[in-house]
Amino acid sequence: MWSQVYDPFGDMLLSAGVAAIPVVVLLGAIAFFEVRAHYAALLGLAAALCVAIFAFGMPPGMAGLAAAYGAAFGLLPIGWIILNVIFLYQLTSENGDFAVVQRSISGISSDRRMQVLFIAFSLGAFFEGAAGFGTPVAVTAAMLMGLGFAPLAASGLSLIANTAPVAFGALGSPVIALAAVTGLDLHELSGMIGRQLPLFSIIVPFWVIWAYVGFRRMLEVWPPIAVAGVSFAIPQYLVSNYHGPWLVDIIAAVVSMASLALFLKVWKPAHEMADHDGGPVTPAAPETRADADTIPRATLLRAWTPWLLLSVCVFLWGTPQVKAFLDSLWVYKHPVAGLDGLVQKVPPVVATPHAETAIYSLNLLSATGTGILIAALLSGLVLGRTPWQLLRTYGRTLYLVRYSLITIAGMLAIGFVTRYSGTDATLGLLLANTGWLYPFFGTLIGWLGVALTGSDTASNVLFGGLQRVSAEQLGINPVLMAAANSSGGVMGKMIDAQSIVVASTATKWYGHEGTILRFVFFHSVALAVLVGLLVSAQAYLWPFTLLAP
Image 1 (tube, rainbow, N blue to C red):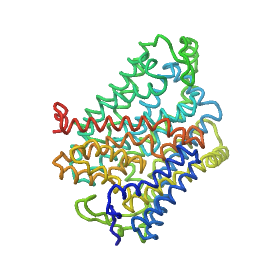
Image 2: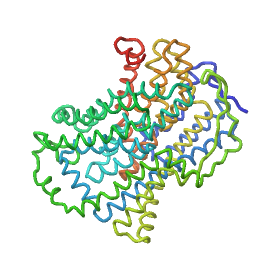
Image 3: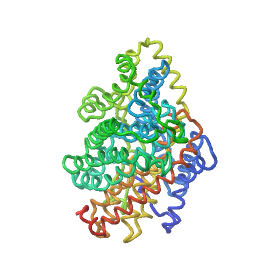
Image 4: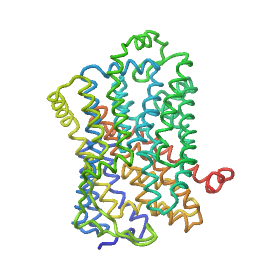
């Protein structure tokens, strides 16, 4: 048994500085030196191993096993999702069916701002609620790219939009995990998060369009933006507070999509923006919508069938009952010998010492990526592809995403090394030692956790116990701070390296991960700060304290 050491240098600031080296190496290589993402991941992994072994005293064998465990987790489930989403996109784009989808979406609105709003925010929230783990960014970025958006716009806007729904993603998995690690009531946590995020569900749609075309052009279409945001925020609040975390995103997303589509039937902007890349506003082109109306019903149904099948399969594979049934048929669980149960977390990160588990679960049948693969194969048959054609397309897709799979394996290896070595907890402890400012900086702990791990669920598992212990020591409502970990974490989703690689892969913009990171970084920090200010107000300032009883 090896116990984690959180302050090996006897100076928390110095220890945190050393703990941050892998993150600095990884993000610095991508953002400033334009190093290809798979090389940057390997550099970051080397730095993480050196820090864990030489600075924090982790046994080398354990550190290597943690890296291998993380790499395996990166390939399944995350890499498996990306591979099969891109496979589906390749199938629909090769024979022109995606062009029909493009024309039909233009039938809702030919305004590029509305297309971003409908796909990146409303539709993306549905996929986040059903599957999470990179699915929404992969799907929406690919769809926007297919609609003619520039790679940076398709990637960056999908990442920014995929924030407000994240806390309730994958049928409430982050909240369920948070309740499990903190011992706090699931419904109290769900309700608290549901009293924090609806405000940002209204802000984020405005923010996305502002990031795309600027403030003035955003104001030109404020009514449909408000409709999309408010129609998402109200169900998000109601379902999270009066039902639970499971169906929050799915119900809110369906209401938002329906409300926006209906509103756009009766409301039109004075000037539609038909330019692909957010260029000058041009007068509306009536023929675009007329062209969409002339698509034969059978052609339209054929083109949309793959995406409908994807929605159905992703939803089914996300339900606990289906997952449990598929796991009962076959699942292989393998304890990582030499790591499982041999790394001990200690106070103040947890209330009492406990050993970390390390069990790799090979659940191919119940993995979300398998549901996506089945949707793609069924779609291929609907589109008239032969088994040999499907196999060739899959081979081309595998070659296409080869570097992305290496990158994701490397990113997750870094995350698992920092988790098992305790270096991420060191960064969290530095922020936790901020006294009365803790509600603000505690929120940033969640942001940091997602930026490091790429998952709100993982961040909640990592820092949930720390949030409860720190809050109780300071006399702050522990439910408020545990919820803040999840709400603040959602804003870190757009800058985690895993999500950026997913976006660059979906848009086939390989080697430009640094450009994407620079595009979204300010938005991530600014929104995280706003969440921190809201949580601080809930802790100290009336009437916001009424939202945190």
